[in-house]
Length: 263
Image (cartoon, rainbow, N blue to C red; front, top):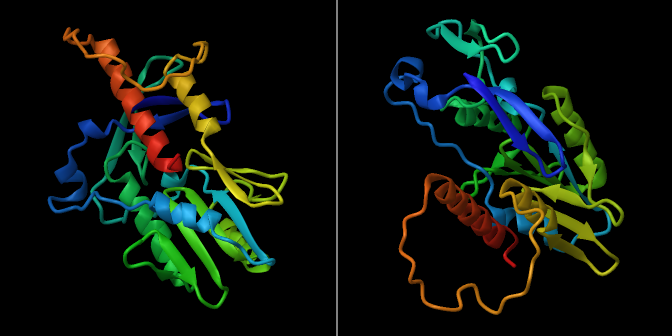
């Protein structure tokens, strides 16, 4: 295991202990035919959920499940025992831990969390989408829920959304519920949704600001351009390792920026 550090869009640095998934013996841990694929809600579905016209009593709320992977169902008693080797960040000593449940970084962590959350939603009356398996519909409460790992979005009559959020908080340790309102924008999946008297809008400003920090460009001076490339590329010198990492990170972030908000 090791320690991961990440800069959050809220302006805070987050640290967590992680398993080095590439070092796992996956066959011994999970079996030869384990399916590691997991689902997240499509961004098109999220935009429809957040931006479609709402009736007067409809509300939209978000709730983040705290350290969700750690709240996955524990390993079964008959499963082979797992151990985690970790270098103590304070003393430098190597320590060993018996692992009773899922830890971030493990190859199976995302799908094990999905197999904890989704069956629970079905157990309390939701129908799971067929073409969009991370969208759930509760006909009795008239609410729709969309899951993106630990980020839960819900839309429907406000009293029923409140009821569902209470049920979610009773089952999982969660952060506070956030409600979309004229004075309360919501930051969800890199998108900021905000309301005025005219309608609901989508902004990528907070993602762009966090992107500049991660790329070390927060002090750069922006200037307008008519097109990205104004001439032929003649310099064919291969990038160094640091430049290559910057290039790949920047391309990934620009791709997310363009495809998420659909500017």
